[in-house]
Each structure stands twice: as C-alpha cells, then as structure tokens.
Image (cartoon, rainbow, N blue to C red; front, side, top):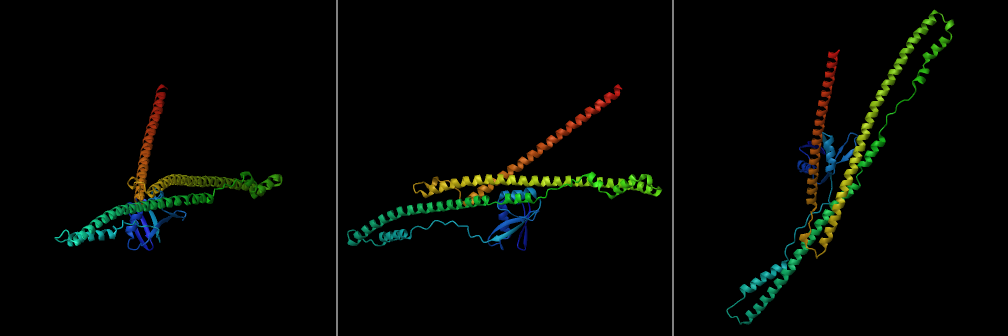
Amino acid sequence: MNILAKYKRFEKTLENIATYKDLRKSIKQSFKFILKHNFTIFYYDEDNDKITISNQEDLNVVIQENEKFEIIVQEIDDTSELSDDSFQKLDKSVNESVNQFRKLSNGQANNDSNSPKIIQNQKQQEIEKELVKVKGANNQEEILEQKRERVIKEIQQTIEYISSQVLKIENDDTEKRLNEKIQNLQKPQFNEFSLAKELSQLQLIQQIEKAENNMINLDKIEREELKKNYNTLVKQVQNIASDRIKQQNAFVLENNDYAKTLQKIMQEINQTKLKNQRQLKQFNGLLNQYQKKLSQAENKKTNLDKIEYMNKEQLEIFLDNQIKEELKAKKQKQLEDQKKKEQLGNLQNQINEKEIQIQNDNIENSSEKD
C-alpha cells in the first residue's frame, strides 16, 4: 500500500507499506535529515477524529478500509530509550602484573644462579605467578558478573517494553470513542400524524361540507364552484398521499443507513475488544515469563547460558514477524472464502438455469398434448 506522509511542510509518498515496522522505518529514511527525535503517527477519520497508529492492528484497519491514505508525522522528545553497555576491559592491574613478570624473567638474570639477586628474582617470579593466577580467577568472576549484569539489564528493558505495551492497551480509548459515536447517531424519526386527521384539517373540505349541507339553496354558480372544489380536493389528497409515500421512502433509506452505520460501529467495537483481549493476554503472558527469567538471572547460582530470552529489539522483530504471518494467513483465508463464494454462486446459477429449462420443457409438452 502507498501512503502519503506529511511532516511539517514536507511530504513524501511511502511505497509498499505492509507492516507497522515498515512504516516507521520508511518515515525515518524519508525524513532522516530533518527528523531528529522520536515521533508519533496519526490521521483524521471521516468524522475528523484524530486516530493514532501505534501498532500493526491499527495499520491493518487502515489498509483494509482505505485505498489511498494520508498520515501526519509529529515529532516528540523521547529520552526513554536506553542503550546497551558493552563489556568492560580487563582489570588494568592484571596487565601491569603480567608485564612486570615478563621484565623480571627476561631482563634481570645473570650467569650466577646462586647470587642473591637471582634468588630474589626467582622468589619475585613465583610471587608474580601466583598473583597472575589469583588475578586470572578474579577476572573470570568479574567477566561472569558483567555478563550477568548485561543479561539482567536486557531482560529489564524487555520487561519495561512489555509493561509499556500492556499500559497502552489498558489505556486504549478506541472503544470509548466508538460508543460516543453511537450516542451521537441520530435515529431517523417518522411523522406518524394520521392521514385522516391531516385531511380533516383541510380548509377546502370544510367549505365543501358547508356547501353540501345547503345543497338545496345553491344556485348554478355555487354548484359549479362546489364541483370545482371537488376536483381541487382530489388533487390535494393525491399530493398529500404522494408526499406521504416520499416521506416513507426517505425514512426507509435513512433508517437503512442508520442501521448500517450502527452495525459497522458495533463490529468495530467488537473487533477492538477482541484485539485488546488477545494482545493483553499475550503481553501479560510474556510479562510473567520475563519476570521469572529476571529472577533466574539475579540468582548467582543460575547458569546464564540456560536462560533463553529476547532483548527489546529481538522481541519487537519477533512480534512484527508474527503479525506479518497472521496478516498473510488472514488474506489467504479471505481469498479462499471469496473463491468458495464464487463457486457457490456459479453452482446456484446452474441450478436456476436447469430449473428454467425444466419449466420450459414442461410448457412445451403441455402445448403438444393440447
């Protein structure tokens, strides 16, 4: 799908957008020299309501309901992203000890192995060797501890991301806005004023009744006037009846539009509920899993290599791929359903043609017998 993106006074057409991740990536590339901070994406619907696109589900609704689409990019100052720390360098004192050991073993010897200087150097070498061993063991523990801290930090960042998604779902006001739309819908009203009552209020009927009550005393001109009033009354009644029919037809159309709009909004509410329930269940499950993984990582007896987890970026990619697969499966099902519908339609047409042929044959047979 192609989407027109607007940022301040700049515009850019984003091509072949299928996923929310593709959309954000394309925006970053298109406005990379002017877009300095994080950003939000939104658009205005047919009621001029501001709708935020914050995940793949929101984008799916847009893709399904629109052939051409326009979004607005709004920059925000987002300093919440944390960067990963790399491993620290080895203890400087260990390297210094090793260098000192090399100097002692290479540059301080002479030909007299029993000299006090040689004996002193040999003792110093033994001390340095033991120091290196101790430093090496301490360094391994330090590396392991640094690795544990990194794992803990990455899991904590993943937990923060999952928690933010849970909070976003819980604060989603889509259902509230849709319910407000229903409340603001104006149900068509039909004027149930009776036809008989409306006719009885016609001034012409009152004139005719008065003339009929005095029929004996009417002269020729008055009788002609009465006849003329009869014809006029018939036309008035016909016009009233015609207006009634038009009002009824207009009411039916308005009521049908109202029913369709109401049904569409109710479907959107139901879809929103199901989507939020499904996402909430998924993210709460992930939150529970990663809280357990965090406890395992904080336990120094746990083997870190046995803790399987995804950092924030890996989890985002995993969820993005999951959404792509779901969208692909949904489109495939729609194509299959459409194909089945066409097959049923063709079959029904064949049945109808067969029935018509049988009826025609029966008519021809009856004609021949007669």
